[in-house]
Image (cartoon, rainbow, N blue to C red; front, side):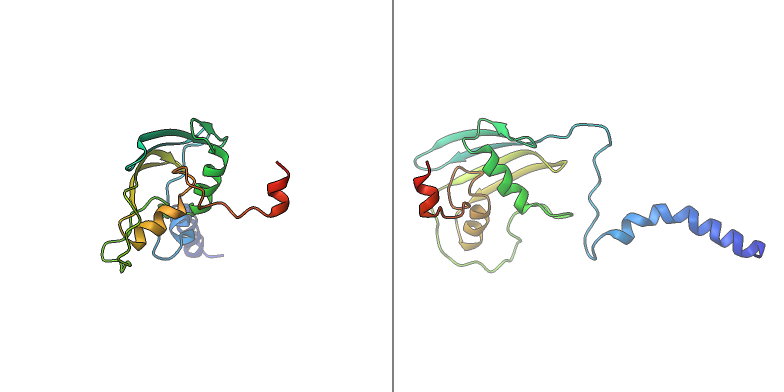
Length: 160
């Protein structure tokens, strides 16, 4: 093996670790930073809901393990987990310019803050059009609604 080939291999081996994250990331996506090793990272969300009926309902939700003041913590954590994918913000607002139906879903509003999957969360939710209603429904259990649950069968209803 020539000295020139050995030098070329050494340079390639030296830069490969720096390029690996970019090569493994999905096209068009930015790689999310990994949390530091050795630390316990807890997913924690603070949810405040307001409308004509509930003036400032407030929940603390901890996940992994589930807990807090949320009445259905495990189910809410599972629903948010289901919305979480690599390199995407599950709490992202409806994109500007999105075509949405002009339906009004009510006065409900929610504000979610905290940390999820190692990233800060500060998201506003409402039901002012079809896109916002769909976004709200994807997180319905987080807001104390039942829309995100599968329907119970008659056998499940009678087992209680």
